[in-house]
Image (spheres, rainbow, N blue to C red):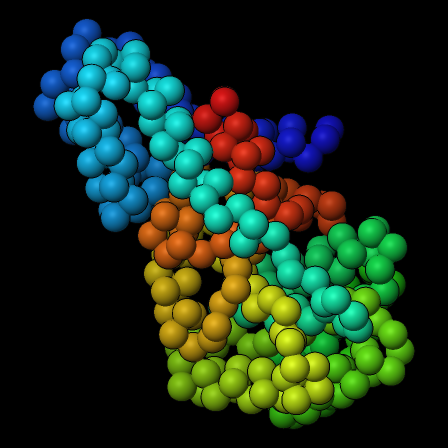
Length: 306
């Protein structure tokens, strides 16, 4: 099965929740009236598109009705599909992961514990190894012994080098050693794990600022990406987490995991619309190869059947 087919299959529950419900709504009404619009609004909210994005789409639909672009219920799906597709494909260039012109590409990975952060790092490592690149992992989540152990397992599994210190040591010191080791060994991609204790916001902010400082001192244009890992199954909570994390770190893009196990995949539309934040990677399965770069057009096609 190719990745597009996996994506389409992974979005089954979201498609049932959004696209199929819109189709049923269209069949159930002869004319567009207030009841029809109320049901449409409810459908968008149920798909975890989010309140601001739902309001934006409803406004556009009402304008479409006024401008005679939507004259009957059957005109709604192609109209709405185009609007959603436009949201998803906006700023497509930003959706691509930045790569260093020379020396190691440094990816800083953040996210709350339980979102699939360490697994995502392992899958990123596997992706880049499959591209023929050398990969190094930095275990800078030093406050959770399991995080260091997990990263080592992924290092062995994907053939990536791992730089680690003792549990409880300074995360910035790990990042410093890793950057210098990556430069000295000619590594292509360095992926830095960080702590996910968002409940201690000020501590996390200081920690991430220090890690950033240390990395920039050695490679001025790094980190090339600061990726926030979000669990798609949490729906609107993922958007809330993203809003909180933007206050503690300069996030350049989102990795959305577990899209295959949720009816809340509409959260991707909310992230792009509400936060204007690039979605860089998506995960649609448990397999190592099931994390891939986000391609907006493919996502729109898989979700909306375009």
